[in-house]
Image 1 (cartoon, rainbow over the protein chains, first blue to last red):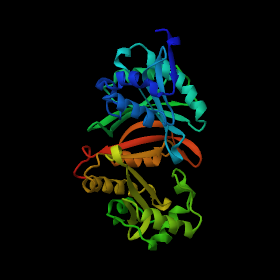
Image 2 (image 1 turned 60 degrees about the vertical axis):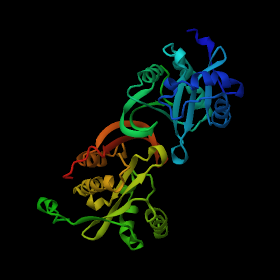
Image 3 (image 1 turned 90 degrees about the vertical axis):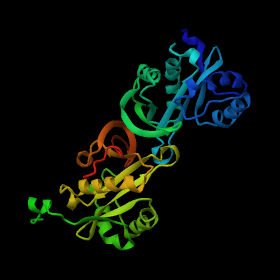
Image 4 (image 1 turned 180 degrees about the horizontal axis):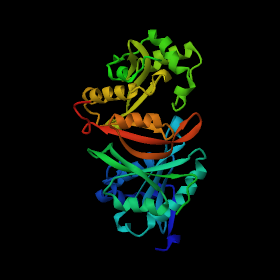
Length: 171
Length: 182
């Protein structure tokens, strides 16, 4: 994979069709907190109401077409030094190292935009091995296993927790 | 205190958990004004009764689950369980504080066990009780281990305490973990 083909940018309404291609796939949204998108209208609404106003959400683009996203959300109040990072990519593009490249681009950009963030953390389910590999390749530290940590898509789930600090080095 | 021999430790020292009242203010001031007690807590040492009364009235009393720890009818600390909302309501966070004079006698371990044995019954939707402890606070980590919590991770720079980001050890006990004889 030629990494110069990969870029990050904010979402635009014109991404709706490409967004729908990967966001309608249950395999892609399986571990995400949001539901599969089922129509172009929903795609437009999601881009307009969720993706665009988000504190930091970027489309992962391959040749400037949206194939996934990375999202960073700082916590509020006394915990705003901490931010949660999430990501997904269309199943056609799994296993090609695209998310890893995109994350390595995203992290310095996030730390620059939010000078108060000290810690990025990611929660991953045990069976989501692909996502764990991404984090390890980027240089996240696996800190532990949180039992029955959160409820998602009808079940209470165990989560692995990973972090990347401002002082850590990209792998 | 000279009478705190091993025999006295083993004898039931009438430890109880009670709702907090404004009349607890003087006992509250004993631990709340002590730097040794507040060192690993999010809150700063209290410096006035007005401040303390405000906390009791506006935070502690309306709290979803807050109790004072009483030893022989005197309040010597407090313990609370804070629920989460929405998707995270299966999780609650335990916090506790104890006056310095009562450290090292098993009081905290005892009251944590008391809370564990009742909270899952009181809150049937609760699956996980967790606690976050400063990595340097070895005493509190021992309390949780003795009370049956599992140490799951050290979360680097997870919380800001007294203006500095700290590594926090996360412990948990699940409704499915607990033993009936606690």
